[in-house]
Structure formats: C-alpha cells, structure tokens
Amino acid sequence: MTHTGRQLLYFLEESHGGVADYAHEQCQALTALGVEVTLLTTPCYPVRSGAQYIRCPRLLEPRPERPIANRWWRGGRYVWIKLENYRRLVQTIRTSGIRRVIIGSFGEYLAPLWSPSLRRLQREGVVFGAVVHDPVRDYVIGPRWWHRWSVGDAYAHLREAFVHEDITLDTMRPNPGLRVTVVPHGIYPYPPPTASRESVRRELALPDDAPVLLAFGNIRDAKNLHLVIESLQHCRRAYLVVAGRVQSAGQRPVAFYRELAERLGVADRCRWMERYVPDEEAANLFAAADVVVLTYSRAFRSASGVLALAANYHVPCLASGGAGPLRTLVQKYALGRWVEPDDLQALVTGLEDLLQRPPQPHWLRFREENSWQVNAQRIIGRMFGDGGDG
Image (tube, rainbow, N blue to C red):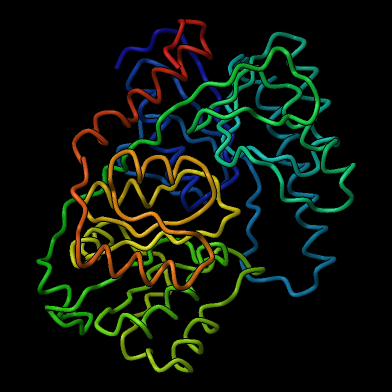
C-alpha cells in the first residue's frame, strides 16, 4: 500500500465494545484510501488480525480490572486517568509531528481541565476532528453550569465534527469554525456462520420452530432488557438469547435479569452467555435468531453497531429509542419494526406484528449507502481539505 503523505492520529480510550469496533473499521477504511493512521489507544485494545494502521498503546485503560466499590476511589481514578490520557495525547502530537487528529472517544467530562492544551495546539495549526457518536450531550453530572462549561470546552478546539445524522449540534457556546459532516455507520465485516441454524439451536436447547430473540452486545440499563424479558410473558412461544457482558459497574448485573426471568416464570425460555462473544460464534448466533432486539430507552439518540451486524446477517430488528440515526435507518430501509420506547405494551404489539408480518428490508441498498469507504472519504475530505461530499 502506498501512502499519500497524509498522516492522522486517532485517539481512542475504549478498548472493547461498539466504539472500539467502529474505530477499527474507520481506521482500516482510511488506511485503504492512502492515509497513514496511528491509533493512540490502551494496551488492552486487541491486536486485530489484518489491521493496516499503526497501533500505539500508550494510553491508560479507563476500565478497572475489577469493580471498585468505593465511589470516591472510583471517581478519583477516573479523573486521574482522563487527565493523564489527554496529557499523553498532547505529548504524542508534539513528538510525532502529526497535524491531523481525530478524537474517537469524544466526551465533555472534565473538559475545562484538559481542553486548554488542545486549544494551544489548535492555535499552532493542529486540526482536530471528532466522531460524535452521541451528539445530544444532555446527561448532566454535577451543576448545570459546569456541564455547559464542559460541553463548550469539549467542542472549542474542534474544526470538524462527524455525526451519523443531520443534526444541529448544541455546543453550548458559539464555535463559528466548527463544520458538521454526516458520515454513515458502516457494516461490520463479520465472518459467515460456521454452523447451521438447526445445529446452533440444538446446542442452545432452542426449539426449531420457536421465534428466537437475540439481545447482543454490552448489557446496560438503557437497552431495556427488563422489558424484553417481561414481553416473554405475553409472547409465549418466543425464546430469548442474551449474549454479552455488563458494560460497567454502575449498570444492573446479569443476576438482576436472571432473577426477573425466574420471578416472571420465563427463565426456561432464556439463554445466557455472560461473556465476550468471538466473531465466529456471534455469526452463528445471528444465524439462529429471528429477531434482534434493540429496545433502547428514549434517551438513546445514537447509531447502533448491532443494527449494522443484524443487517449483515439479514436479521430484522425490533427497535426503539429517541429521535436519531437508529430510528432513521430502521425506518428508511425497513430493517424491522420501530416501537415506542420504554413501553411494554408497544414492545409486545411490535414484536407480534414483526413475527406475523415480517418486513421486506432493503438489505442491499442499506449496504451500498452505508459503507466504511464512504465514511472514510468524507473524513478525508474534511480533515485534509479535499472537499468532501458530506
């Protein structure tokens, strides 16, 4: 591969999960178009097979090895790691000489403490962009004045913001130099299944003729898994497979959902895989599923990597959430049923309708219009001044 002299530094604090998977595919696509990408990340970020970018594991890992019960110690550790990681970002920019930087882990937390050094670099000619996965920054920690100050500082040094749906960003204070560009969320190139639908179902003790729901990925409260379990009381033929890990110590543990299923008398129709699921095994799970559940709460307004996975394996979804790219994509390409968020009856009605009258999704058009290549082309166009089409 021949590089064009373009160099990009990509800042990523997440080692695993949707944001990390997204960063990998985006960096791969950028590299394929001739950009020399250095991924500044943590030692826990895996060495991925076939990666063409440079992996630079200099950041500290935000997620502790074991849950920290003491909230003061947990909070103090978070503050120290956040500030240290941004210090290492600044140091890497200065020592590497790279003048184009993408913030893949965009967030406003503690921004008044770390943003001044990035603004100095901006004044020295460094161009900063950010992938804003969650553009509605309305989750307030601490006083509102601090939240507004933090959000304003997080955007202050940016020239480019990349989002997944056309939206007016609330940057809390004017940033006339900020350009907002819509980029698609590409489809993850997961491998084909290695086992038949029937054999996977047999392995999980799932009936051949029963509807199987799949809840895949990090387990967190915002996914309304409790409502999905409650829906099994009403959809008596359906089975549920839950595959993934709890996202953080502040989320409900899997034990909560197991106990709920026991209490409601549906535990015999639930299967639990409380762990990281490798790509090949994930492919088999999607092959065995009839519906992927993406039942987010109203507060969720982001894109969903699991939606792209479901589209890759041609599995329709039952989805909910706030206004945002998830809703837009599900409805635009008929990828499943969209239901009112946080509403058990709406979920039950939507599921029954989905099973009785399956949609006719536009899988091919979704794939063509939401590719990583288009994503990378728009990033390059903005970051390197080649025009872009976003």
